[in-house]
Length: 121
View 1 (cartoon, rainbow, N blue to C red):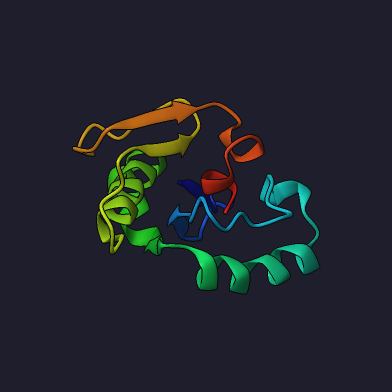
View 2 (tube, one colour; view 1 turned 45 degrees about the vertical axis):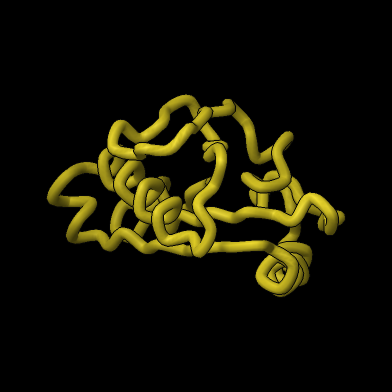
């Protein structure tokens, strides 16, 4: 699971969660900040087509203003994991924090988007 949008001052935070099929690895996954836009655009339909489950959650600016960016990100992560059509056996999260209200086995991995395909997806 990974997020985007924590840098801008007045926009939403978008969190995605993906369960990949271990039988169908997707070549080219990596830290999205290091990929060209054309690479990301090419990977998106592959991920959607080949993933066992995926979800995207948008936490809007109003909620961010109300509860702060960190809490909004944690809430988005919990919502993204719970929105998956399949319950994950373990949630891998890019970063160093696991949401307190995520009642699933979870592990935070610093720079996980560079090492875990399900995070970089």
